Image 1 (cartoon, rainbow, N blue to C red):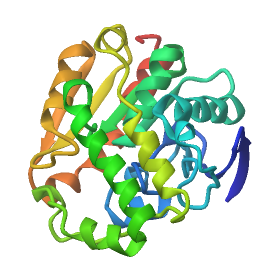
Image 2: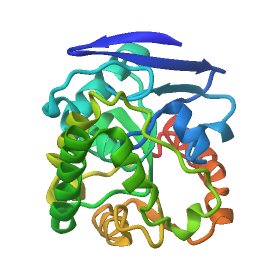
Image 3: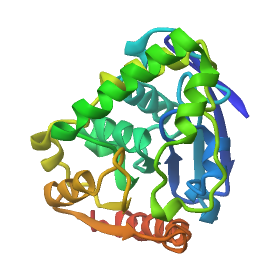
Length: 267
């Protein structure tokens, strides 16, 4: 593991160099590289023969962060991502993969610099646009609960949260975030949304969208709307844990296909 400094934070970075196409892997809100492995969302485990960059977003896992909500807005996280790509893959097109907050970060980065990516694999995109205000209010209430009653009260409430059918049987995990940072992180998420539909509709990056059912925080409506907006996209929906176990293979195929297309000049 190495450390990469960005304004206001030090990011914990892991680079696996087996040659081949560059891939950057992100994670979701309150998660980390380690927690995504526990949640079966570490799709990079299915890759070989790539240059895979994985990192903990600021304030998550082994990365540091400040108690500043604006630091955790998705556009700010996209700034961190683009700085990482400048350093690790200068001048190269990269395949990006990530769930939820990671998917939002990738979309903000792709809208800003579409030439940086030759493919995206977006997992369980979160609430967006019309559905965003309700989850934003939930995040603000979570921040207040932690500040008023402590992390244990939040953890107890979180344990009672609804579990999507595709995640049945997974162990319950706690946020991989320091307690003193967690309220700012939630408030930053409450300030976040996907890029505007018109900006997303201009993206031509080949994209696979992987969604699951029965998750109000990651509704099918977002995945379906993204699939409508992004002309060069496909949508696959998981309904069981066995469906999710196929996702590493989807990423492997995406990377191989998009990397080959770029090499042949198809993109």
